[in-house]
Image (cartoon, rainbow, N blue to C red; front, side, top):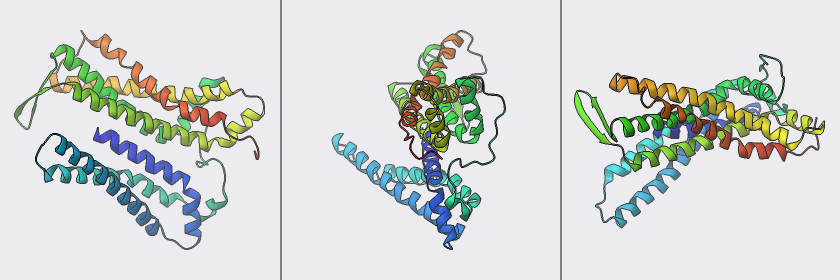
Length: 301
């Protein structure tokens, strides 16, 4: 759950930094230094973390009052520390990307990555979407990891539910641990899956924005809205497919590391969980697909 939260904050800060790239270029041209921009990003991350801490602590306080439980300072301290760590880690990559910004980018339009290449010929919508997917593979890895983590947990929980009768047996630091897998674990996984969908939606949205001129040109020469949507949907499907492969592989590796056995009896059920990451990637591409078909064709350069 924390890992998915870090990836979500990470991707959000990254998207905001990419959208403010011109703003940062203007500030650099006016005499700002990279250190000043770093301070700006981390101060913004601190302010957002304080806002999240306030909402979380208020929710926890109301929970204590409703359940007539005593006030626990440790819980509030843990929430504050975890939130600060998540937002600090989420601001690292955007801060490092500031080194690549040049002042002349204030007058540049269109694609952010000027060194992107195509690895194969375009022979239809799937191959075109795959080319776009591979050209932004570093950025798309965030979506893949964000979806793969809940997929690993789902496959592992299914194995524990069917094979271990819902009880997780393991050891940690030489101590025996027994944990009952209940509905709260699946609820946490569902929340992580929702964050993964939001992460995928933001990153595909940014990919569509980077290709704004390309998409508007294709629509101006006769592309239908259905073709434009499918181009974006295919990108989400590729993200989900890669996450599905990584998720099932990670779940099998986790089961083997804990129990030193291969779940042959439940391999079919675990394999069916590959559908969920693909659907998550597809759902995450719905809103970017609608944005792509609603782009204004006026002023195409």
